[in-house]
Image 1 (cartoon, rainbow, N blue to C red):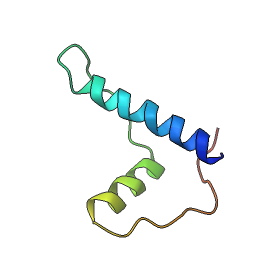
Image 2 (cartoon, helix red, strand yellow; image 1 turned 60 degrees about the vertical axis):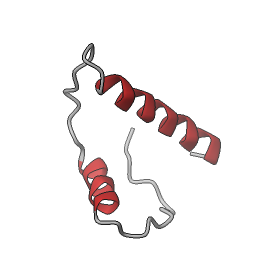
Image 3 (cartoon, rainbow, N blue to C red; image 1 turned 90 degrees about the horizontal axis):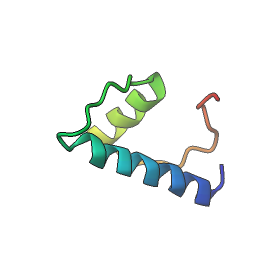
Image 4 (cartoon, rainbow, N blue to C red; image 1 turned 180 degrees about the horizontal axis):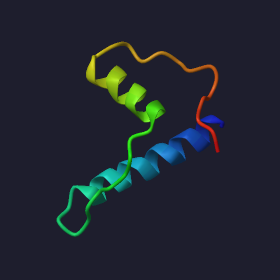
Length: 58
């Protein structure tokens, strides 16, 4: 993905999180291994390094 595509996916995720935080929505999204890795990095306050290859499968 290019930068613009990454930003669009991030925008979608931010909007989903905002909607899930309201009382009208509930979240049953499973956490994939890749997303758990990302969550762990963010929660540990590690420096976020550039991923040079994408491990997300379509």
